[in-house]
Length: 212
Image: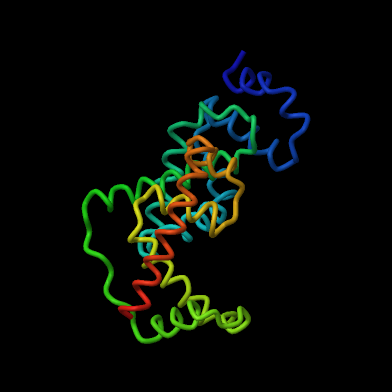
């Protein structure tokens, strides 16, 4: 029996409940593990946008492409460990989140200099936001861009672990259990850190407003 056949037969129950796209992913993975390595390019094409969305929300713009590439390299290296108990895209999402976490861990260890002070537009946006202006006043494309830049500057002042929890639990509003699964942490750890990291982020934003 080929490696791909053994892989597919080991997951009969999972395959029955899968959507068409998930079954197609599993078929491609089986072909890759059976030696047709070029088929991995199909998985990249199918999930490229998904990975870029995750990475794009978490790292500096100039590093998105490189980190997204690292995600697929990691997925390729550990593909044989995928067991189909969740959709391939979810498994890939966990790799993407953890790769971004490692990206910030590396920068945190290197003690890179903090980003420069806020520009006038960013400072004005933050002041209005902290003052509680109506949400619909921030709905323009320009305001969303300013919000992203301010948040990225604030997040870079958190530890990588605090940042990861803020992104998953508070910004993306994922359930604690899902965030714990994606990070490979306990739910208790995520709950405690989510509470503490939110307070830290609030203090950072307040300090940025004062110095802006």
